[in-house]
Image (cartoon, rainbow, N blue to C red):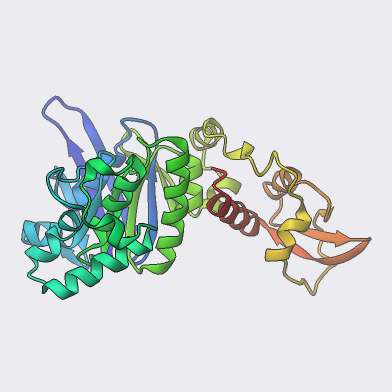
Length: 325
């Protein structure tokens, strides 16, 4: 759906923010851009809706160059959520949400129904919140409205630029949980910028790690965890305490994991390591960084195998459900 072809962005002072980027973001994918400050992730995001013009190369949207779209139509069809919530303070919540649908000349009934559905989807009671002003809401509630406003006109693409980083830890955890649930309900392509690796693991279908304007590694969470491409990726994960999540430091055991993700293996003679159901998740993780899959035994009997994908999904689900990020 979104394709970068040899895309670069450089400024008059010679600084190259993005360097020869080649990237394809699939339709319906939750795609995370991550990296240290100044790596080019926000610039990459903003070039999609032409808030920043590229210097070289081409970006395609549904096979068409973004430069060939009318800029207003392009932006109307791309939802955008900022770190700074940027709600219009003089407007009510429903007026804020209705801006783009009204520009698209939707009828009032359709707009009202959409506002009701969207507020409910992020846990805000419609009749309680629709007539309030932004100043009457907490930071977390305002950011929920920001997400809803981006979805209001039913765009195919949502851009999210570190949307939760300015919030307090409790509000941030709750919004991460809400976003995890929402992405399962809506069929949207989401491009999400963050500097938080645990947030990326909990939400992303694929994670693109950037350094100095270039892609270092782009893959699924489980593939990156198991096979970091180089020391930069490995150290970036470590700096985010990915290997020391609260789940690994908790009382969770392999037996908790197999309730959700155990599959039978007809060939139990395969030469792989074997762990007991009472083994810690941390030890299981350590083994899975070296083996494709691990045998599981219970009371001395082989009962199946687990792989890194099962472990990563289990951790992500628990982080989403329990707010343990």
